[in-house]
Length: 361
Image (cartoon, rainbow, N blue to C red; front, top):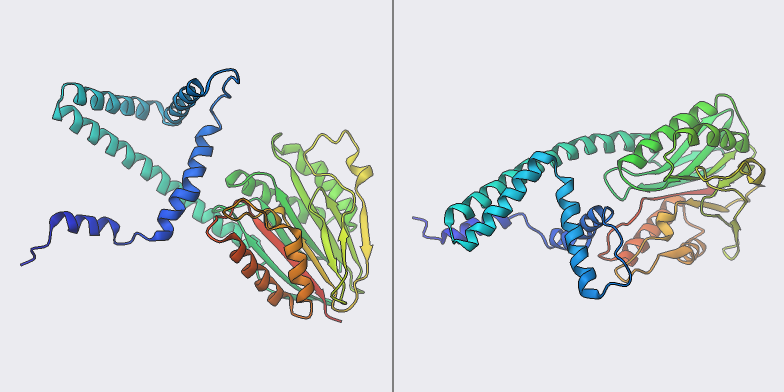
């Protein structure tokens, strides 16, 4: 006969799959995301108010923001459960407390069902998006190419592509501001437009100018796109344009020198007043054998540890310079290991994308 404590059995049932990582994730990541989600609807407090009044106004605004996220029917039931809870403590009355408990759990079941349904749809979207991103190390012309892509959420707004067209190889690394589903939808649209433009244009500058023309038409006003776009010709010549994207790094085979490719160009989606086309600059070069080109999104350099320090450009340069004799895949893994060590228990705050190109001959 099993004489174990029933409370202990219930506790073990609900905690059998609980891990330290999940508790840490709840406290360090999910709590912050929940706060940001609700806080975006909270009006700014007046500066002249004292701290106590500011705190009271903030808590009231946070509660209102939470309540208004519920649909009208659930909002009424939630307020009813609060009323029953208050009455149950004033009377006191077990009936009111039980009603409050039942209503809250019923609402929790509805919200959980909605979340699981949305999560299923996000999983499908993640699988579709992952199929659009090149994953494997490839050898093209005279180059060994490795890449890495990791969204901060289920789906992301970074864009990476390798396109074999017009007897050239085109490589794109883009970043749509924001995270989540909205950015992911724009990423898919960006890929479609870019592939279509390659049927009509060959030059990288022409392609990005026309990308700006068509992509920005339907871009939300609070979003923008930055992109580095380059072409590789059969003789090894690279043409690169940078529309507001972080600078690319050209590591020379001597293991000592790095050229920062910071060519002119502004992001897509800003009010450029017609100067986008005139400021977009093409950078052309012939990399020598064992030279390395590194293109990335700012999610890599701005990755943070628990102390809010950023990974930065210098860490990237140091790793690649010290390991320039290795393959792009080996360098990629060294970068990821260093990033993991740097980040520690901190969670990823932005999509991370980078590509390494090494001249093989």
